Amino acid sequence: MKCRKCGGSAALELRRHNAAFCSPHFVEFFKKQVAEAIHKHRMFTRDEPVLVAVSGGKDSLALWDVLIEDGYRTAGLYLDLGIFDYSQESRARCEAFASARGQKLHVERVAEAVGAPIPEVQKVTRRPTCSACGLSKRYLMNRAALEHGYAAVATGHNLDDEAATLLGSVLHWQTEALPRQSPALASTHAKLARRVKPLYRLSEFETAAYAFLRRIDYIVDECPFAKGATSLAHKDLLNRLEEVSPGAKHNFLFGFLDKARAAFERLEDVQLRECSACGQVTTGEICAFCKLADQVKRRTGPSSAAAGMVE
Amino acid sequence: MKCRKCGGSAALELRRHNAAFCSPHFVEFFKKQVAEAIHKHRMFTRDEPVLVAVSGGKDSLALWDVLIEDGYRTAGLYLDLGIFDYSQESRARCEAFASARGQKLHVERVAEAVGAPIPEVQKVTRRPTCSACGLSKRYLMNRAALEHGYAAVATGHNLDDEAATLLGSVLHWQTEALPRQSPALASTHAKLARRVKPLYRLSEFETAAYAFLRRIDYIVDECPFAKGATSLAHKDLLNRLEEVSPGAKHNFLFGFLDKARAAFERLEDVQLRECSACGQVTTGEICAFCKLADQVKRRTGPSSAAAGMVE
Image (cartoon, rainbow over all chains, first blue to last red; front, top):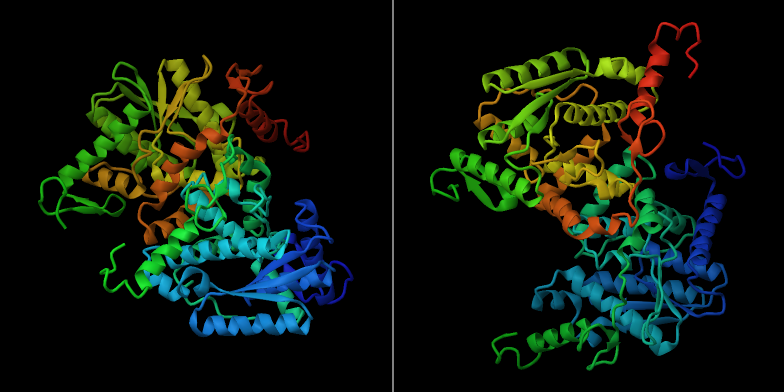
């Protein structure tokens, strides 16, 4: 195999692009895909400060690396979920990454905001772990962006993540989730930061290769709660499809964005208001995060034993 | 396991319905599902003659059996695809089924209409076999219904078939195919028969069980050309999903029909006209079947050698 760009010996093959690249030209290809994503969806300009949500994994650190390399104004946001060693190790990677590059890293403890670390939240609510965790992360990312004045929150979601989420939404025809599946969600309220996914054009394999070639020290382990998650089952299905027809994931996600997403966009806008408890954006009276935090407080607080753990 | 209806020993379990049935009550359940499909989508009345497209397989013969049992006015249509022993054996099953029940069976040879049997059609066209075959079958089913005065053509497509077709359409976001995926397609032109799928609520396992319990002698072999077909790969994926979450196929298909299909319905109707060659319905000047037949004729006819097989 030869590099598509220079004809030199290729380091890796991208079957869905019917192409192979040497290491330097793969890194160039990767950066171009990110640049195209940012440009096509007007994610942010070079003048706008961007908050990069980093987990310590390959995707988010690769994203932060590309944005720094490309001269964007970035800072990191690490949300400490309180998941035992996993959280300690991933936080250490983020801190080392930031300090080696002289970048600011905001750190927030989920336990402080929601009342307990994620493993305990899991125990006291009947929600699936990933659901309460995802809700908390989205809430805290947005709040941090507003508090510190960032125009956009960028997350490391890659093509595999997005295709798996889409498959999940489609298998249940979650018509409310479908129009929100997008590489860029505009701010539709003064208290809602833009949300962007500059890696949506790149596969998990490609972000891993980029992180490896750029010698990024990331945490390889998956979150211990991810085991058995439906999103992993959906990734597995899509990988099987990809194996027999390279490009299947890409076509599924991009076909949706190009041809089908508009069909699900609501004719009437959702009415956004401010949560009467915390002031963040919600569609109801009290936002879902405050409800979760309240539930956690009542069940883990000093009076919970006396109250017989009744909700 | 006990039968949900009578408490007797259950013969089979339907995990997605969280139910089990003894043999007689399963047959009753099966018939009820067909009745509900016919009623809900107003497929046909007891006064309207229905043409049941039969292949000799379990699904279409099970369908014909239920309709006869339920007192509908039916006749069968067997399309002889000319696929070696497979076609001979499947035709024999259809003829035996019809004569044992004193029902009329129309037989049409695809080779006569399209100019060559399916294995030869495959060789002379660049289309995938299933594509040319499906096109020919849909054309001939409709033509036969019109010629013989049947109000509707009923096919044996089951839940697995429909879910697999939907998955294929969704993976490529075939926005033209999606609105046409329905258990009942109304006649939108005087030369277009209604097309209905009364088994769409029943899984492949359930039609096999019904055919077995009713002692229907059907051909077990798959069409020899089906091997490697994408529809089988999609069925396989859906079966994996079904295994971990029973009801996944059902929710995927029914969720689409209930919540998403309308989003894809075109605002403007497709303009139907009559093919200038055969008079059947088409959206263009010459219908796809006539184009296929013409291609087959030119490539297999006596002058094709002299003409150097040029298209």
